[in-house]
Length: 307
Image (cartoon, rainbow, N blue to C red):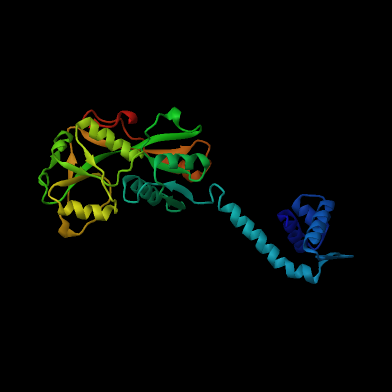
């Protein structure tokens, strides 16, 4: 069933005349007649009876009219669901606990009328491809490849350099320290089962460990953040890393410690990635809301690929 013919039928039913419907639709009366005739052939019934005063709905036409209106409303809802400015802005964050999710929450508080569809994709390559294909509007990621190796039309801007912290249990040797240098970590067992090979966070921690001469144990299984916190809290020898702005909640009895890393401060580089030709107005608002990350200070460290 051709939607234009259905729209013409409804216009003719409302106007009561093909000529007036033609004026409303901006087409010729002949075009209205052809569309109605095609719709009648598709349905196998007569929808109108011609009279001296115009066109009167048949019994079948009267039965079809409310369903025709429903079809047009459904078509409008379908179009609106993907129309920029009407559909929700689709943004990817790796995890709802981490700093980019906080940036997105701040944006939504500043723009409460903006509809957001927050998704969580796995690795940067999948997220960048989703941006390129239009499956999502933007993603927050660490960008491990040069801009000229991103897909054509995909752009990126550094929006946050997040300091890392060391996470220990109360019985760990470093639990009482106010700060720790990365060089001191070589004497301690560092555990991160959340690291997956080939991911951007895997590339970051590989570079971090190599730069300061320590090893990160990635042995699993990975049962999630809550399980990791429980193991770290109970261990006198294990420690892990966490972003300064990562939201963590644990039972008071666990007594976990978040210890700043200094000399230098390792920074995890978060960037926003989007398509340059994406017309969604909320994307422009999100980009305007996010301030560019300032150049890293001398007493900080970031991987060479992020510079």
